[in-house]
Length: 293
Length: 339
Ligand SMILES: Nc1ncnc2c1ncn2[C@@H]1O[C@H](COP(=O)(O)OP(=O)(O)OP(=O)(O)O)[C@@H](O)[C@H]1O
Ligand SMILES: [Mg+2]
Image (cartoon, rainbow over all chains, first blue to last red; front, side):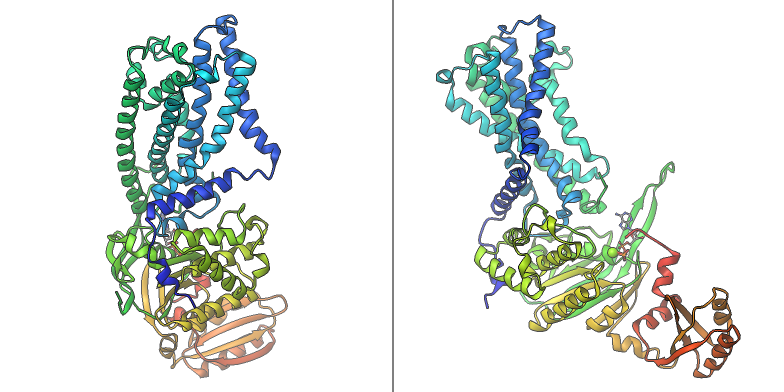
């Protein structure tokens, strides 16, 4: 007989192990397309429909001026913002999903698991399905709405680096929300989506920050997502994106530095908040609280 | 590190603040009070008590899910509040009566994933999964999606998950709740076998089934309203009732009015009534055997036929009744609290 207890003597760094398995689990959940119809609805129809609403609204407001640089600005901002819903909201939603739906949270929590690493893993697993929606949306934009992306002109290294930092950033923001979700057991159902919705307006996703009233603009400038979206747009459509005055004074390198610094700051804050909330949830007995959402 | 005590608690307490709607100040509900327990390694320890007694609360504290508000607890030698990361690899836990798990994964995948969380490599994990599923008589379901399992089989999968990591200390919260008679028996046999196979293992289970505690456990703590009222081997607990006479009667169905008459008889310490379709069972604790005559008289006068009469040895049920003044069922009926 093998000695199981000896095998459990940790041979792998616990956070990495937790992350790896959570990613596997997240992927199993995300890729569970036993119903192709549902998959089509969630990954294709839903993102395209929301893009379409945006396009129609834009058309009405501008009298159909689809050649303005504002159009690709909005279109790409909206498309990439889908990662926020996928990763950030995904991380915090995992808490509710495990706690209320699968009823596994207490078993994961009492296992030798780094719960934060686990949550990040669950969120990162959604990058692939998220990317699918983003790609389809951008593809349709290029094909039917003349979003001016030229493959040869894409700044691939900038795009790659920005995307990776952004996913890390979104996962960390998700950790912050996950912490709050642990504590706000009874009201946390829509926390992720509400925050994602609010940030949509403050991150320059669908309009440049200058459009916001002056007293609200600082919020936008403090949000790392603002710089992330700007960099993604610049990587794809270069000069067109630089046409906007908001961040025109910054070079790509500048923006990247700001993004990195803000990611670091938000990352540290997220981890601290998460730790506090985790302790609080344990003190209040909320880890396995089922609230019947 | 080896410790002779697998679980040790000292004056452990837990209070919940409950905010009632419209009222400003929070009420405090004491779910656990001054619990001091010592469970040596190698023991199958039972916590016996009615709904709301605090059993789950105690398990939640011991498994690092919930912080205590008073006292301390050590599991496998480590303080649950200060060193949860030392406790967690050494324990596992199963709650009965719920179906947990990822429905979209198969039984094997669910178990494999949890083995991974504990760092067990795939090969020994799979060997262990096969072994466990065979013992639980569900080998043929290894590749079934959890969502396609009956509630009972999902619960068995959850039990397998608990044993999978061969923990030093295993916590089972009402493991047979909701299982049918056969499955409960299988689980009890499995639990006993697991402990007997390796005396370094320790298992704490909660139950409100008397028979389960009596049959299975080396030691039993009887708990009610957050307090441990007695803690001893079942045989010793029952020994305390040697003087009283305990009778089990089966009679034709009773009218409700008869019960108070029986209770009012001098020398009747306790009557509990278990109605069935065509008959009723009555359990009596009598101060003395001689009281039996009056009991039978009362029944005959009420036109109730006596179908069967046994003098019983005391059970844990009787011990509970003696300690609390009411039977577990009556406590639960009088004070229904959410599980
Ligand atoms: N999170 C909570 N907030 C407030 N009160 C709670 C909480 N959890 C449990 N309680 C209360 O604490 C008491 C003990 O509950 P506990 O679940 O530990 O009992 P139990 O012995 O496991 O009962 P059961 O047999 O119903 O499972 C009960 O009165 C219960 O209502
Ligand atoms: Mg309970």
